[in-house]
Image (cartoon, rainbow, N blue to C red; front, side, top):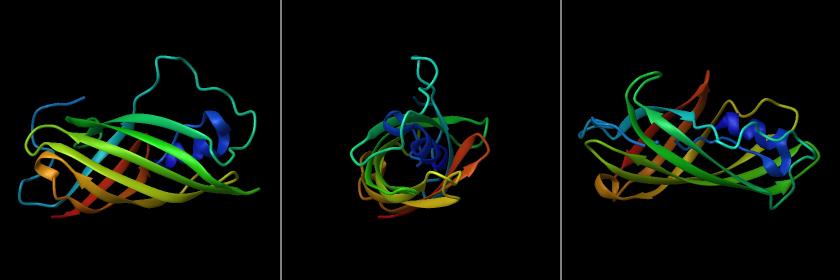
Length: 168
């Protein structure tokens, strides 16, 4: 997701970014059934529309963007799902502002289901992006129907590392 936040600062109204919520699907479990903590790696899916637009102005409050990623058990490893995220700039300053993102992770295999999350985090027009941030888990479906907890997101090369810490 931090990769996405960096773009939010750079691309204004046409931004794409962070947080990484991260998952079309594959076989195999997304996590061991008895372990509520697991790690996935998200890699953004590029658009068929071609190159991203170049920045014309800093982002303003109300600007929105969305992005999607595929989720993997390890970098270059087994694909275990997909995600979709929508973000809105909610506060804008000369140096950056705040961005609120809501997303859903779709996990396949055993266990399977959806995990929803959201975050409010700062972005900078001068910095590369947050080193790491947390996403609040707000619910789920299927095997994750009672999910609560958080996801720690950090940039990891051309992937986003997502450390899930679930309860329920």
